[in-house]
Length: 211
Image (cartoon, rainbow, N blue to C red; front, side):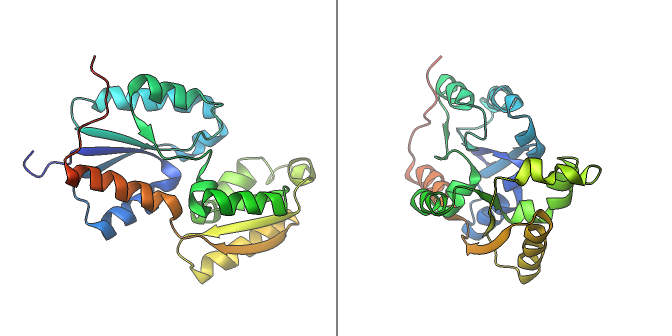
């Protein structure tokens, strides 16, 4: 293909920095990335059809397509689309689980079901996505309506930036929640991308169904 990327990763915009960083680290020049808006987590019904459109738009341009999305609140509709299109996604219901790992996330949930989670992306955009997105900047009295059943905030940190840890602590304080830092790194996101890269190097066939 003359150096042209052969594998497309369709990703949530909340993963854009991490995905491009992993590509840089791995030297995976055969990957191309197209992201959908991160704020669609507030309107997850938009995600399945948008992912389908991306797949169909790019099917003839790439040998392989993978999706970097959890179920992300689509209630199984994203998986139904991917089954129809013959495209694989990373396992897990959301990015919290595939950053932390399934068993570690289950343990966190069992330890305290009333846990609110942040990632690097959510820490960086906390005011826009959480405070403004939920209208707490205009109606701060709604905080207890949204977060009254939560007891703690767990920050699943990707890079361990002290400035982000400080901002995550401030976010917990603002929501009135206990704070806990859990260094998570890139979790199974890195594993999934490495396997996708290995499939390319091994010369495995595309998984798309024959029309």
